[in-house]
Image (tube, rainbow, N blue to C red; front, side, top):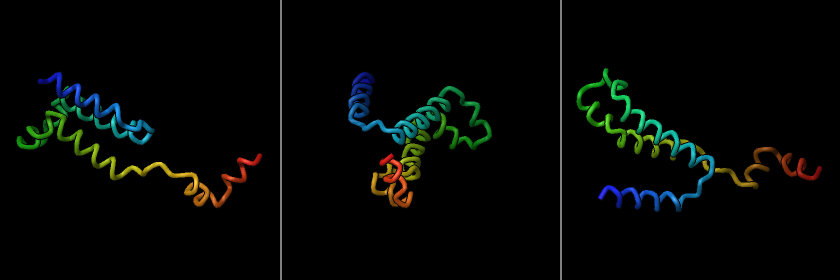
Length: 95
């Protein structure tokens, strides 16, 4: 059963467009999730209920991934780049 869950997760991740933004979200979430799993002493000052919920690493990683997905900006398009730079990006391309 564990193997089927891993296979389904890998299949889902293979469909992701791995740009810089998605890599950062994935890396930070995995790091926090595994870090809390491997170092439960990081939660020693929290109440017992919070320790139970956060020590598995799954819940904090999921919440962090959703939060970062909402917080980090999407990639900007070429039109938006020209708008922000005042048309200077098109000028520099002509050189």
